[in-house]
Length: 346
Image (tube, rainbow, N blue to C red):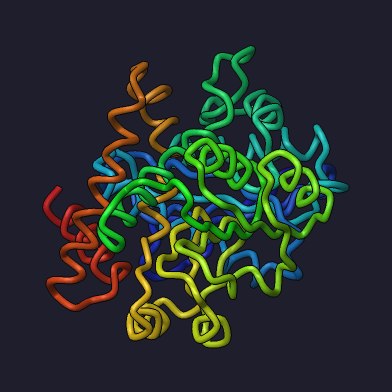
């Protein structure tokens, strides 16, 4: 039987822990804000070492979703869910159905989507016990995997950053180092290959690296070295915290622009450290908004034309980088201020 415990967390509208011993569900849903609309955010399944680690992750992700929706001009709030467990061994039909019941207990305040460890086919099962789900398969009336839209948004942001920093948005022969070739990283690599970029790649799974070496004629690099590649763009597309006191001094890229969430380990100090090195950072929650936009346009607004919304990511990047340069603030701090303004004046 599902048991739900509410936590009081400052700055969050609702944080609830769900447990169901019959399905081995142990999950957390965080609703950061519904000021602009119901909170829409993915379910991440990950083998966290404990609930404290999972809580820290879901809070950071949910807060970022609020900023992502606001700065992207969407009438949506910010929320996120995490399931504690290994998606390769712990994910079962029973667990996913229990997750649906847990989501349903919030009565539409949180709308689910996919994230790491969750597939559209999994969301089909979640949708058996709640209507508050987006991104199910076409067969179940959803718009499917938004990973390609996420990658297209990252590409648009990269082009805008290249124009701002390097004087041209052309990615032909640009060197891009991609950390993580999961669904978003894979789609991004395909798009960059079509643009004529030269790719270096790293991933936890050696087989994926071998595949992309063949598919893209990319160069495989150990995970511990990918951020040290002398590149035009370093693209973190794995988990967060890659930009920190240890890695920032080792970076050799002109631009950091990737799909990973919460790229700075310390979001107060690390952005300034990166700025001092004269490396341009494109805020992750602007760059990776394509997936959220895909779901918002297709399943909330029920519109078909996605391209103009994705193009807007490039324009937002230009605005943030220009304001950042003018006010001598790191782009992430600048973006945070702009997102906060949109929330305050909504």
